Structure formats: structure tokens, C-alpha cells
Image (cartoon, rainbow, N blue to C red):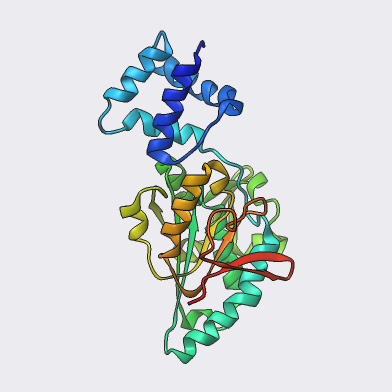
Length: 277
């Protein structure tokens, strides 16, 4: 497939406007490989033909299919587990204590850019196994992603052995069942704890519908945005977090580059960002 610089800039600009995803020239091979697959399906002779289809589609059907093919990111259960453990073991009890004093029994978690659901299900597993008296609380875990295909996968809750390889054996026995050769399904108890929604993080109206979260996980997401988009998304998320709430980013990400709205804290060698009043 041949693509010139102008076509690449137009195409990646359209992708960024729709999803926030930023692909510079270093990602050209990756982007073009996905575009070539779509061109083959649609019998396009040239990139220009494909661009015409994308531009004419007022409902963004083809563009969304392309974006879905570009957002297949690395994910698995218990990824960057130390940070999650710090949250559930050390921070959640403090938040619960504060909420009890306010006569509240609701805990809300948002896993943004959750892909196929490994992260929100991991949060559910850790809460189940770690927090005593959890049944007395109204626990809400929302997993969101721009990819409807990924969300449908998440709702089914069936994963390969590779994706659950880091789940401790006892937890695996307790909360998973083998449904076919090397395919494992999460238990109904865990599935019931998590709700999945389609949210585009650069869509202000959609993000504005996400309010009152004590914990937001936006891990390994903003690395796919440019600086301006990252700042925009983090500012939107600020309003989604309760006063005293927390946001968690991936190990290679930092809020301080884009926003001074959160206070950086180090807890058990994990970096967390606290929304103070």
C-alpha cells in the first residue's frame, strides 16, 4: 500500500479528531497496516479511495471500525498489580472510614480505556478478596472504552489462559471456570460487580455523564494522546472525581506534565494522584 505524507496527515488528523488518538510518523507502518486491511475489505484501489469513504460516512461507521483496529492495546489480569494492591489495601479502607462518618455506603470505581475488561475485573477480584464487610457497601465499578467490540468481549468475560496467567491459583479456582480448552470465564459474582459503557474520553458530553467517582483508573491511556489532548481529558476527568478522590495513571505516565489539579503522593512505592479540595 502506498501512502503519501499528505494522505497520512489527513487520515491521522481525522482519527485524532474522532478519538483523540495521536499517531505521528513513527507509527506510520502500524497505521498503514490497519488501513490496508480495511482497504482490502472495501476493495479500495488507493488510499484516496479509502479517504473518500471515510469522509462521506456521516455516521462514522468506517472510521470507528478503523479506530477499533488501532486500539488493540496490551492488557491482562493483575497488570501493574502493586499499584492496584496499594489502592485496595491501603487507600480504600481510608475512604471507607471517611464515608462511614458521612453516613455513605457507596464506593465508585471508573476504569477508563478498559479495553476487554481485565482491569475492572481485577479491581472486583481484589475488592472481593481484600475488603471485609464489602457486602454492606454499594460498590459500583464502571469500565469504559471507545471500542464496542472490546466492550462486548468484556461483557462475555471469557479469557485465554495467557490473559489470566498472573491471577493467583486460589483466586483462579474460586472465581474462574474453564469453559473450553484454555478458555476461562469469570464468575457471575465478579461479572455482576462490573458495568461496561462506551465512552469516548474526548467527548465532553459523554465524560460529563461520569460523575461522583472515588477512584479513577486511566492507566496506559494518555500515552496515546498528544499533550493538548491529554490535558483536555485530565481536566474533564477532574470533574468526575469526588473531592478527596484519586486518579491512577500508568507507570510511564504523569499528570504533572499537563495539570496541577491533583496532588502527587507516593504510597508503598506507587504514585497516586489525589484530588484535594
